[in-house]
Image: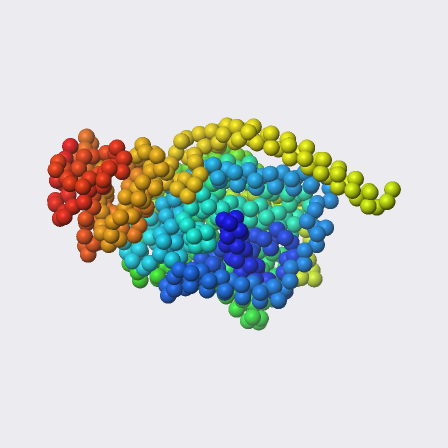
Length: 454
Length: 183
């Protein structure tokens, strides 16, 4: 019975996510199974947790569960009516023996990570910042009461953290009718499956060879910190899910750069906003997205300057993240949640006062990137492949990918000027999946741009 | 050979192969179980990282310091009888990571009751001043005290022993906090 209920609990948000993805990618929807699966899960989880939060302010219990379910079904139905999924079964099965072998390995990898999640307990943050809130929300009918946010005895649970992960876990609890820490681990595992699917999908979009799309997920498996340790998929922290959202965002930004596909830009904006709803650090990744989009706008300024629709779409895409961040901060202030005060004011004065830290930070970052027991060979290979690609095939997409990797690392390193306890190791997880994608698609020159789409 | 006979042969072959594989899988279950146990020891070497499964897999692991079976359920059973509006205090001898973890897990299981934390710093060389880390809201009355690895005041009545290291004691009126930090 639990299996059936859990399947339903996952199916409902994924249906909504599928509907949303079909509504956003109106002109060029993807018919790839992996991309559809990943987008359905990512958008679905974000959507359902948003609904639980907003509707939870007025209803609770089964009323909340059924109203969220009804909205999800309607969105899914509208999306399906608009653009049906037409999967080519030939695309599902790789043509060459090596690709078939890689596909099998990818499946084994997913099973192994599932097993890993089941035999390891949730980490400290995974339990006390996320699962505990999910349990409390479940015990209060699916939403956290407003009194929680100003409870001084729960200051340790980071009341100012956004609620995507806790409410996603609480959604599962609502369906199975009990809080279950073992069941909560399905959510991080689903993020891992989505990451594998996205890496496959990204390589299919941009890479020339089919085997490249199956190599990318293997790279993830070679990074110990993504599987075990603080921030990894098995601990139930928000860092790995954040990496998946950033990967999806960058995939659509590259698509926007290549084909000027404004639907892709809208999708990138929405995924980046979901990142802000997952963790406050999401605003840093949103800023990276904003820089990449602004660079594109600047390079096309002459062509676009009289087309106000393009500027409007651009502003709309970027506004989602800002809206979520400002909205959440406003809510936190309104309900009197205790904000963390470990960060020094982000001002030029602080930067000047802490300038002496620069060589220490640079050394720290380099040492961390070369820590094999955390990252394996991920970062050296990433930088080598970017360098190789920039040298051999100086195309704009490689520059975008290079910036998508370098900008967050620079931003996370710069945090040390303002916040001495900044967990760089965990923050680097956010960029690691984009790094894996970069390696996989820069092994060979990218696919030529689809002129029909452009 | 007719199509029907051919299909029957195919079905039999399929059944035979399935039975062989099924048998191998079934007999391999025990071996798989052993492999699983060995591999779990590899990927979750520290006992605090290993999950025993179940709805309280993580909290049970983190409450190992209570040295009782099913610690989460025991704590839940003890607090379930208390009114939701009653606040509580968790009194512990010091502030070590293990005590912090135990406090937070117990506070999380005690939802929606507010649980404050008092660290007595007994035997701490740097300072002997008790530290009131978290305090319930003023409008909440503190009616219950958790004593973790410390003894309740002499003469305390209706002591609920959750385990050898954790006791739950009702109080009528809260006294000066330092008075609960008797060595």
